[in-house]
Length: 170
Image (cartoon, rainbow, N blue to C red; front, side):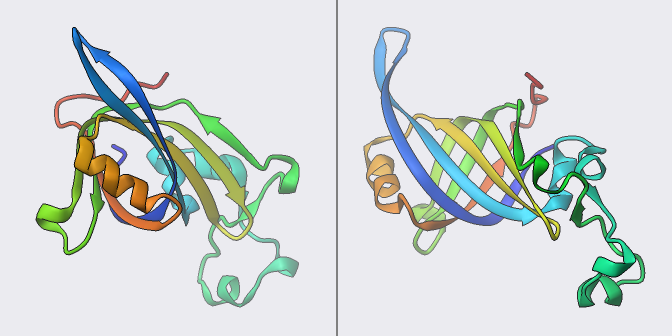
């Protein structure tokens, strides 16, 4: 199950929009988040995804880190720069997305009933991936003001999936 626990990333964009919830109009928002993480994270999406794009280094291309490991990890791109990235159709509906703000606790931005989707994965040689995704949520006025302040800045966040549901796969 996909989770984030005190992950550091960047809030790249905030898009506000009007939504109807029955007869009531509310302000909806899309947050665009980017993180760089180990390619081990690919297993959160599918158990064979990492081995589909990464291989062990050949003896002539091993660096000091590879040589220090007893068993070199899958950290070289199989296809080189021919595949720079891809989209992954995966939704987490009903998640709680928390942006750790200020001193934490009461000052955190807690966005409940959020949908996490729009995953874009950028493959990088060396065992790192860039991961960009969207958080669809309904922030209140105070949360919108804090989010606007955070655009373009590094943030620390957590995401808890809903306890009683399984993410859809498209």
